[in-house]
Length: 143
Image (cartoon, rainbow, N blue to C red; front, side, top):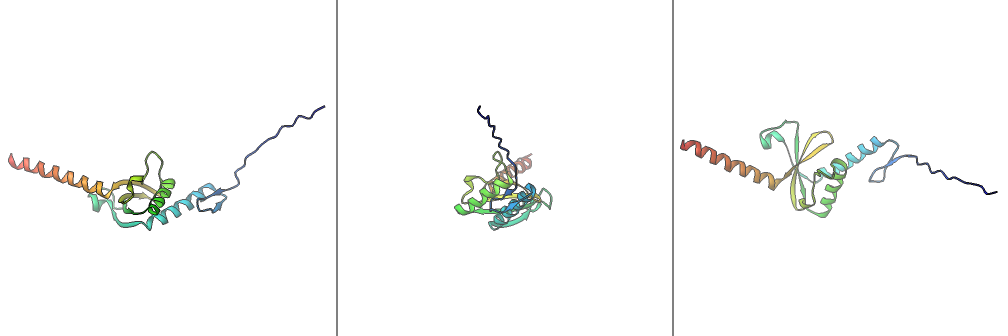
């Protein structure tokens, strides 16, 4: 007679480990910790801050815009860490091409961010709008 043995593997989640190594019993506490750490690290790269209505003349005063300088590879690592917590792969807040640039991000709720663009992109957009407005008013004057 031979014994028939069945091995059962049961996985049980016993905790959650944040990217800095800290362990939590609760998933939401771990996520909140990661958000706090990522936000603290990113704020060290902020070189300017305003609200959207001041810069663009629209939006809510509560919508804060941060100008984030990505000057070094270490800065890019912080930006990638921020992406891993606050954005998805389809719509990243920071991109690899941001190295050496200043990026404007919008904070419209606690722990809610999205990309407005690089400072250069926004300046170019303003120039295009300015040139379009000049052309429009010049044509209106001729009428």
